[in-house]
Image (spheres, rainbow, N blue to C red):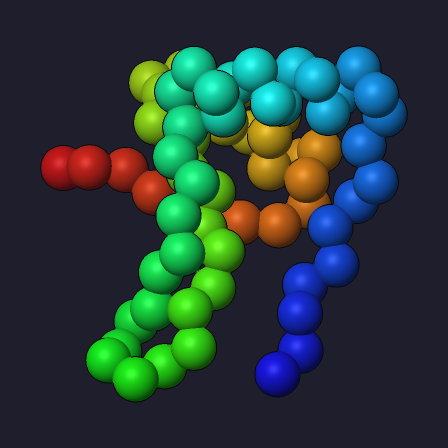
Amino acid sequence: MEYRKVRNLSIEEAAYLGGIVDGEGTIALTSRNKGQNRRLAITVSNTERELLDWILEKVSAGIITTKR
């Protein structure tokens, strides 16, 4: 399995992102199918697309999904 490489964050970026995850996020271990190894998932629920785009740009990993 190949892991994605995330970008190194500055202290300020890491602190800001940590505050976002603490206030509006979830950290969990997930698996797609029974019996598979679990993997780390960090999610942020927010309606501000600019903020989500900023997170995606800074971390260089993940996806943005919308609820219908």
